[in-house]
Amino acid sequence: MRSTAWNNPITIDDPETGLHRTVKTARQAQKVLHRNWPDTHGSRYRDADKACEEVVHGEAAPRKARHAFIAAAIEAHLHLS
Image 1 (cartoon, helix red, strand yellow):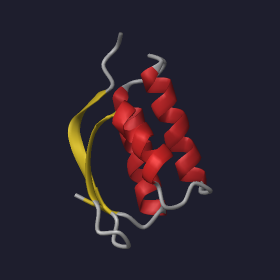
Image 2 (cartoon, helix red, strand yellow):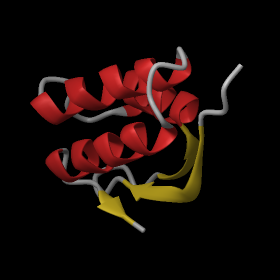
Image 3 (tube, rainbow, N blue to C red):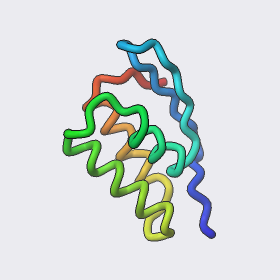
Image 4 (cartoon, rainbow, N blue to C red):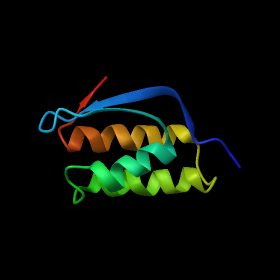
């Protein structure tokens, strides 16, 4: 199975809940998207979910999911570090 790990982890902070999460792989990103995302209706959310799925199935490089996840976080007004 191909690795879904990212070269650089992403920490997201939800200003509404105060929760901090560090995401290191496309699998983790997909779990966060499905379980803890504030807005699942945005186009960037759908793009990130699809990109994570592609990476998990070995159809895309992990960086594709990372970039899409960052875009979705920005769209959802989450803070990144």
